[in-house]
Amino acid sequence: MDIENKISLVKKPPTEELIQEDELKTLFETNQSPKHYIGIEMSGKLHLGSLLITGFKINDFIKAGIQSSVYLADWHSYINNKFEGDWDKIKQVTDYYEEAFKFFCPGVSIIKSNSLYHNNDEYWMNLIKFSKHMTLSRAVRCLTIMGRTEKDQLSLSQYLYPSMQATDIKELDLDIVHAGTDQRKIHMLVREVFPKMNWKVPVAVHQHLIPGLSKANEQQDAAFTKMSKSNPKNSIFIHDSEDDINSKIKTGWCPEKTSENNPILEYCKYILFHEPDTFTIERPSKFGGDMSFGNYQELEADYVNGNIHPLDLKLSVGRKINDIISPIRAHFSNKSSLFSSL
Figure 1 (cartoon, rainbow, N blue to C red):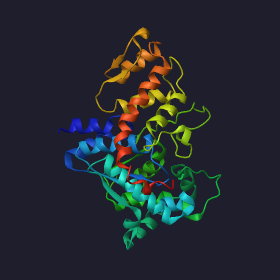
Figure 2 (cartoon, rainbow, N blue to C red):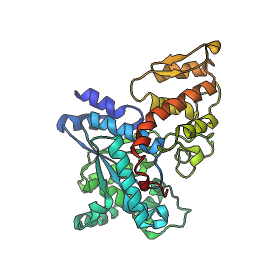
Figure 3 (cartoon, rainbow, N blue to C red):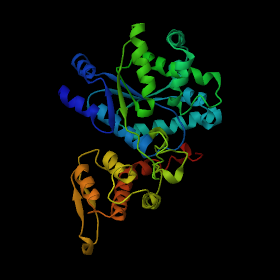
Figure 4 (cartoon, rainbow, N blue to C red):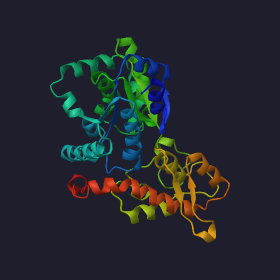
C-alpha cells in the first residue's frame, strides 16, 4: 500500500484531528510498521462508541500496516475509582474488554498496565523525570482526561494520572497515539514535554465521540454529551437484543429536516457508512417505496430536504445497527460471566 493510501486510512472518519500530517508522512517513509495504541479505562459494558467506533478506527490502522494495540489501563481505572476501586472487579472487566477487542479487531495486541508496570524500575524513574516538567496547575488542567475537574474531591493518586499516561507512551515506544477528542490535552502535553527530554514525539490522532440518543444539552461540553455507560437508556450496548436496539432508536432524538446534533444521523455517518456500503431505508410503496444511498452525504441531503421521515430513518438504522452488533452479541452468548455483573 502506498503512503498516501495509508495516510487516508489514518485520516478516515471517525478521525477528527491529526497532529501532524507531515510527521505522519515522514513516519511512513521511514518506518514500514509504526507502533500505535489507544488507552482505555474499564468502566462498564461496551457500547457503540467504546467498541464499534473505536474498533473501526483500530481496524483502519491495521489495514495501513500499523502495529496496533489496545492498552487496557487497569491501574488507571483503579486510580479513577472505577467500580469503587474493587481490583477484582477491574480485572474481570479487563478480561471482558480484551475478549471484545480481540474479536472485533483481529490482529490487535492487548497490553495491560498491570503487566507493563510489574518489576519495571525504568518506568517509575521516567515517571518522576517527566513529572519534573509539570506543575500542579498543569496537572489540574489535565484532569478532564479522567472526566474530573478541580472541583472534585480527589485523591493524591489522581493528580499523578496525567504523568502516568504520558510515561505509558514513552514506555511503549509509540509512534502514533490515538484517543477520543476528550484526551487531547494529554497528547498536547506529551508533544510539549517529550522534546525537552529527548524522547520520541508521537503523532496524535483524535477520533469523534458519538453522542447518546437524547437531545444534546447546549450548555454542556461535547465530552459530556457522548454516549455513556452510566445512562443505559441513552446508549446502545453490544449486548442489547434486536428489540432493545429498535426500542432505543425509536425514542432517540431525531429532529425533522435537521442534521446538526442529530444522533441518529451521526450513527449513519460514523457506523453505517464507515465501510463502503449501500444503506436502504425501507418504506411502504404508498409512501414512495425504498430509498438506497451509497454515501452519507446523499442521505443527509435527502433528510434535510424533508424527503425522509424521522421514523423511517430510525427503523432502518435500528435494523442496520442490529446487523452489525449481531455477530458480537452471538460471540458473547456463552461468555456472559465476563459481563453479567455489570
